[in-house]
Length: 72
Image: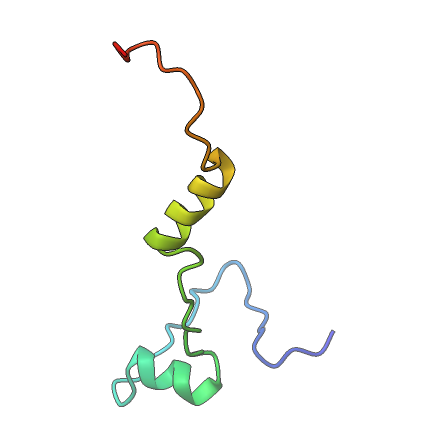
């Protein structure tokens, strides 16, 4: 397997410490490696008006039902 990022280290030896790169921030590194992606703007699916219209369409416009609470 060819992977230049991997190294073999003997168990009896201490692992070398990778020095921090103080010149670049994480944001700069992400942008430089192409790992930072812009968010897609997502529009809300239903506005309040559309939801009300959908509920009214499901309920219908019929006023011929009898409400038990009506004293008429």
